[in-house]
Image (tube, rainbow, N blue to C red; front, side, top):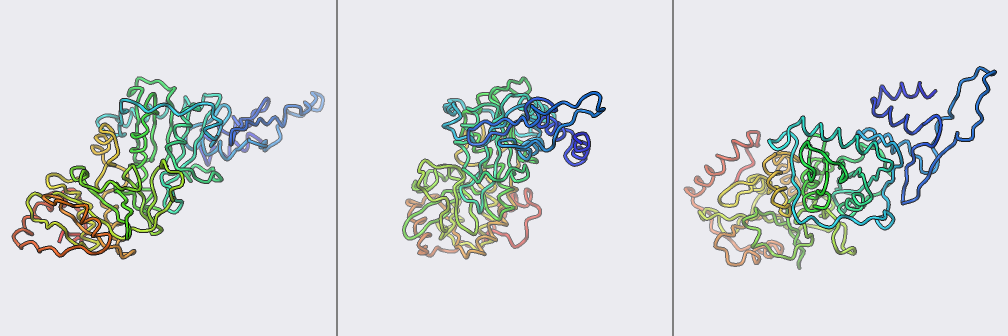
Length: 454
């Protein structure tokens, strides 16, 4: 019976899943156990079963299935789909207070971040690293699974599964991710997977490493990198963009300003960030915007803060154009807003979709900027135009160059009382178009013609 089931499993889930089934169904001894909420369970349904006599000619048999309290085939199957076949206990979503270990203290030195297929981490090296880490996790007497989400509201969140090699690693990921309902076990319910193994040592790419694969939306965290919460969150934010789009949400590197009489989203290149109002509702300056409202990406310090905010009343894009072609403030159509968002122009350089996250430490920001991935900037820009249109949200471009009080203009945008601005001359517009076209048409040849600056 077991052999027949294993044969069927091989056709649907592959050899790794068969191994997970065999681990969970030892013919003798204790079955692999799944532990939830800190309680440990063992199932030994056949431990006291009478052995068949030799004279009967019957072969040893094992009742199937052997599920019991805490023994979850569904969880083991889902881990097998992620390449991890636990040899022992699986502890899932244990409360940090019951893990018996605190999250590692913040790292003084930012972790090294490398993207699969980049000059810093070849595809072969990433594949080797992932194979070694999953083998390490599979061999442990206890594996710790922490399921959570990037996003504080279920309307737009991106479910994330962290498979950890220690209680401390699980505690760290529990602190980084937003809580999410734990009923779902299937691997395909978690678009993001993080393999967190601070106890794993490798010579492949260094020990303190965060390696990310855009194609599979997965990351590997090794060594002391588990203590670099900011870099892990920056990589998670970059990797979650595509999955958020599938849910109809925009993952934006933006500041959410909540002030009377309303709120706005502020999108800005780094060079203009210093002039932004400081009253952001979210400390990490990144968020999820869907038709249902605005949600933070990660847990905030204020446990009483709402998971979802209504709004925004306006979307404001900032630039710093020293040529003075752009007026201090310009009301934009949804498609014009998509163009300036796609360009991410700061007066000197282009930063498509204002990526990477502003809160990312410099090594993480450099690695993410150098290796394109996550949600495609063009897809984000087109979704932005769609969202502005669908929600009738006004959009504005504010040129901070020589503007004494850009914050005043931001609050004017929230109230809808933007002062009139002088329209640029046709000569100035021609200069502006040529400057943008040189970059945009080369980088995004599939950009629809109606997405333009003015």
